Image (cartoon, rainbow, N blue to C red; front, side, top):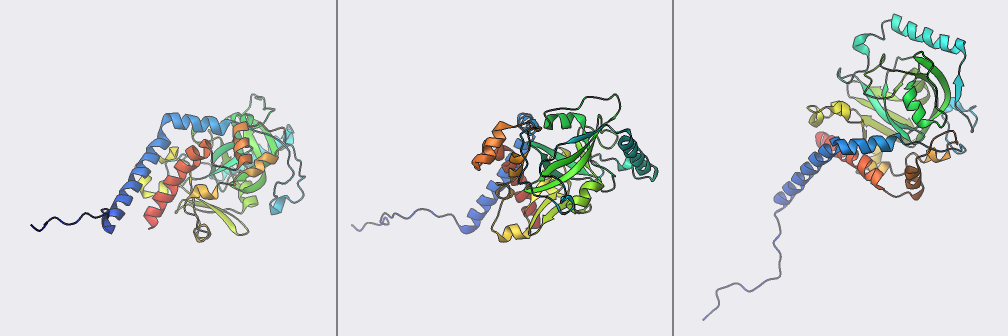
Length: 322
């Protein structure tokens, strides 16, 4: 009797292309949700805060200089200004700033008015999310934040204005800038106190030549052929219903990055911040991050901080633009 059953075959079942595509899309959706939830877990947030607040070390030889800092010495210590004339000038500038109507309650950086702009940067090994006020006549940092960066912290003065510190080396991704800060005991006059410890103004705009677009929620830094673009979470539709003020600005890949076959922002960050290894001994040291920078491989720090953030950035932004 003839066998009606088909002969055995070694062929494996293959998913139809449409079903396979759908499965990949669903997987990406789950990854986005997982990354978003994970980034808001208190334990991870606490870890990131502890990691970011650990400081660093010294020796400044190979730091690149911006065009307006050519005459700045390579070894440049923070100089604290106790000069009453300097302090008086700062207070006068703030007074004029307020008198012309720029510093009004509705213009204070608050994270809710939809106009705030921010970016991520480092001083030494201390990572900040800094907000930008393009019209503020100075850069501001709190004494608490300053003391987490420097070995010799500042003592309180009994006044809100603590000191003026000069020739501060700042790192925005792989770019290095040199600028000054005014140290305040409390920066709550300028922004909600739980948002950040630093606020950048006109001096920073001048040396970086940064570009910003409030409507699009973008800040970009460019040197020669490289560009870093930060997008505000409030401009990502999928994040609008969340408390995006708790999410740092997201690094977005530029067209040149895409042409160079980069697909995730953490790929662009692998060599970032190496200049902080050249800082002098007046800076505190984060040995774990120092080891990571020297080794040059992806560590748990990068996986937790950069990879989770980049998964939100690249997937959500690319999803909206695609």
